[in-house]
Length: 451
Image (cartoon, rainbow, N blue to C red; front, top):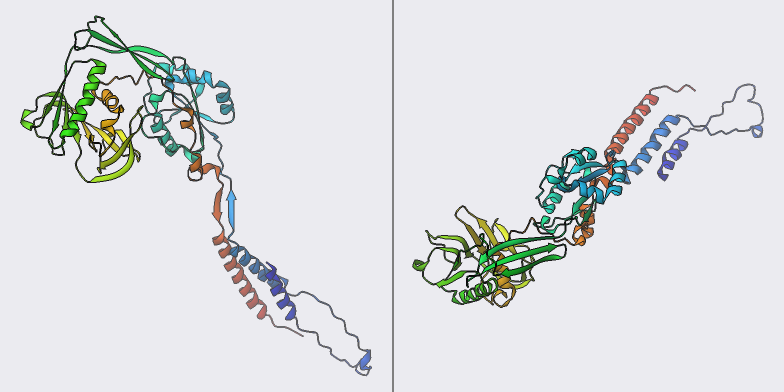
């Protein structure tokens, strides 16, 4: 901007000096008695102003000016609670919720769609009788895409572990999650009774609390609802004979532990496949037509990939994984590797379930054959407990915290001011001033000067 001195200097330099005209009354006076008077006076100050403004606008343009403005947002954010626990949740966090409502936050149901409602009316609806089963992770992922202007969000939920199914999404710093342990945090129930191989009836009792779930067994109790059926398990192996031995040993361990009525058969010819509850197809060959089995465990075929990873399953220690089959499958993953890829995937069909296994039961592929977790991993597949609804285990509170390492990526957009580039405005102003300066120069040149 110091360049505005340039048009000022040029303007003063172009001022023509005054001329002395001698008239008759003073022509005979001595030359040395002549006195000169000088006075600096700006002429055409408007032209000088236009040229100075041009210099100032050019300086502003080079500095890349922007205009920052805080967005106008009357609604402060959202408060979300589930209908099925709204009364108990409100009692747990009443002071905080009331203060948020007074500060301008609005109440929304923690359900797909996140419908807005008035909290006093929602508390009178007796929503505790309704059922909410959607995964919290899925709701949070949808919430971060739907909430307008990325406003702050306060979630108030129970801490039941079974509500956190699937992959954990990236949680931004605009979400504040408050979880609590509900009053009915302990449950005990009968998970099933069945007839053992020696004729006695075994009853399995489950007890669940925020710290975990435990099993106890009682025998010699007669009950009419006892399961007296025998589970038929068939293992087919062609070139994977050793894999069949490892699997048979794990199934025998399950039978000895549960004392269920199980018949395990190992066959090596497709013509000898009998009907079964479970068929373990330990072969890369396609399944033959006409197989009669409610559940099928099948080896994947494809490109073998060497990996140094882990086989991960719920509530089980990790098992070393050395090789796997590269597959692209949308089936639900039950076991995953360290990168999140499905190792055991469940495909549900009308005729039964197919479990796709993208590895092998071989020590060269993974540590399953030597791991004591192998029978424990197979047990819930063979005999599901169906304890999800009554599961009272609590999630670790650290898993609900925002991803602070991703703060720069997922920071709510509503927190940052709105920035607008003013370069276009400067260019337009410069053009207008330049045209005005040229027109003014042309106008003043057309006016004749009279001396």
